Image: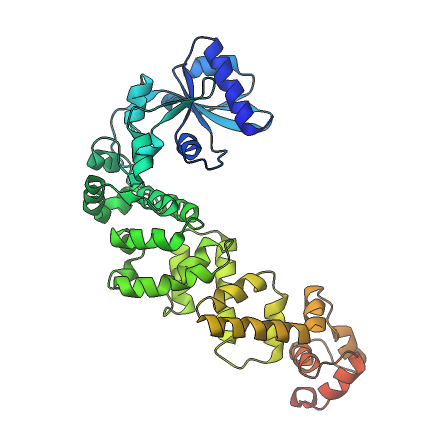
Length: 406
């Protein structure tokens, strides 16, 4: 069974026992928009204990908040009891909740387009917040008092921008006012890890549009204080390369475009401040080093190492994205030509099979130590520069260098 069918069977089990059970949130929005979605959460008036008793494999994710994870055929579903949130003190989560009706549950959610339910058994949308109407109008509107919604969870400020960018919707006027008022304090109560996760979700859904919205609401400047003195035109210019970057570009490489004048050390500093993964920092660091190749005249060895790296293809396209159509085409053609010319050496580097090894040098009387290491590096330069294929040829040329004679 596919995930949707499994979710339907969970609702069916609950409804047969006399409980309400609906799909909730993002799935309903996407269904109305006719967008495929497997992000299925289930809301019910059954208690957490009842949910646990009805299904054989469950995990109490947040039993105090009425959230139980139900596992069916290796798929997991959050099944939550309808609730209203009572006291908020940290700008993130309620201190306590009370179980309630579906209508009251809808009122605690963030935006009208995310506040609808769907009964999969009779295929009916249950809409207490005018979400369908706002979907038709193309509006992001906070449910109820927008100031209250953002005070409850400040991350909703970024979520509003993410949904507006993804769907190309406008943000409702009152919601806008609340966002502008709350922007300066949102990082006080939102962890940077949660911010980073939202940015990653935004990255492949019109990220340039999303970042412009974040800038317009002074949120981007809160995340990156170095942008506080940048103008909208400067931000627009930085984001102009996005349309030429591959769709699978990691979020961190998009964000690099915001900081073209920072040193490599400063770039690493802001990446670390976002608590990015080591993998993210590695790909960004590689791309930063790769950019230097296009502004210098490096030895061919540096190009070989660049092309042999698993991130090379992606970084070539990201680097070229900054340039005009004509220049971008020329850069990519030059890359292709250079890569073909160096193909044998690139494959050798990928396979970690150097033409000259320590054993070769020792056979010619070179002892282990600093000199041997320097000769190995020089040998690689010579082999690539002169396109050598035989160790003897490389040794003969190496013997003529100052390193060998030292």
